[in-house]
Length: 512
Image (cartoon, rainbow, N blue to C red; front, top):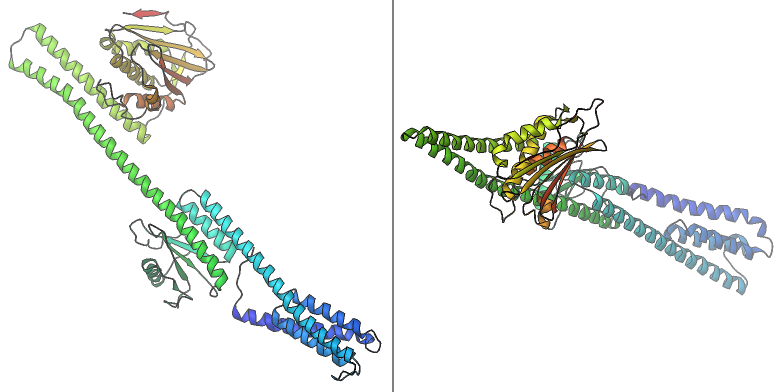
């Protein structure tokens, strides 16, 4: 599909060539028909010449066709209608035949030319429609500003044979300096000033525009409905005719709309991001303020009591225990914040090695002995559990956070179970409790940062489960939560092939 436009000199040259060609073809045809001039078959020559005129009308303009029709009538009269070599016609029927020939040739040439022109216009409309359809389809599929620019430049090059350069605004309605897709093409300072004038005044500037036309480029503004994305700079050898101008303007409108859509999408995304950041900031600030206030107040109160009063050794021990418990709570808060920071920055690595899962669980349950005392805590590990390949520290944090979560939500004296087994090259860990579970509508949000069920006021930042998910995914594993009839169930699956040497583990035991 070629929409290239010829220059005025090329068009004039083609027209002159068509005039000469029509004269030559009629002359050659007449020369070839000379043997028929001395017979009564000179009528046949009129049909031959009429056919030649119709043939010329299929690819020539109206002017050359009229010349061919007139010349054919004169040649037939001069060389073939008796008396020869004169324009005088003796017979009335020959005069009538000549008049009919001239009229038919003339009208046939004009009508054939018009039909061809209509057909040509129909083909051009079809090409323009197809070009717009392809552009619209590709722009609708484009994702992101860079991809929209790429599609626009490729389609302009394909349908207009023009090299285009798109300069965008910076989001504050200011044209970006020398911001182009093709890095090898740099506008001069003067050209960029003319481009800014086109953007600011929403008018065509540069070559063939009448405004600063002594430059190499023509600058077209991209006009949107809410914002103007930028301008398109093209190198044109000639101005666009009326038909191509309509197609070009439609191209610019489609490209401007696509860029505007991406601009607005990015702006909306930035607004959502800022709103989300602000919301998370407020949530984090309020949560940290609340979580810090309680242990700090406890530490300050207990320390002040120890310093300012002469209490018995038992009382001092109890106060020190409160300080220690509050310190653990502060340490847990700080660890969660640091772990979340490590996860989001990606500045942590997984150190995999072979470990006995019993050692890991024993350490976690020992550290949480005070928290687990009010519950019936059960550990159920498969007797045939092999060594597992994990990061000991990360999985320790995972189990720690999950068990703390269960102790916060489950009623006192209920059962909390930690089970583990090996299945199909995977380590499976399950933690169940007899708490209220989660609302079905909130299950998909359980592992999001700062998530808390509104009806529960157990404290915490809502980071524990988010950290758990991050650590499990760092092992290329998965974790999901489900509700049981009387509580919640967390299921962890971590890839871990069986080692060559298996280690026997302790049998089932129970804490009460």
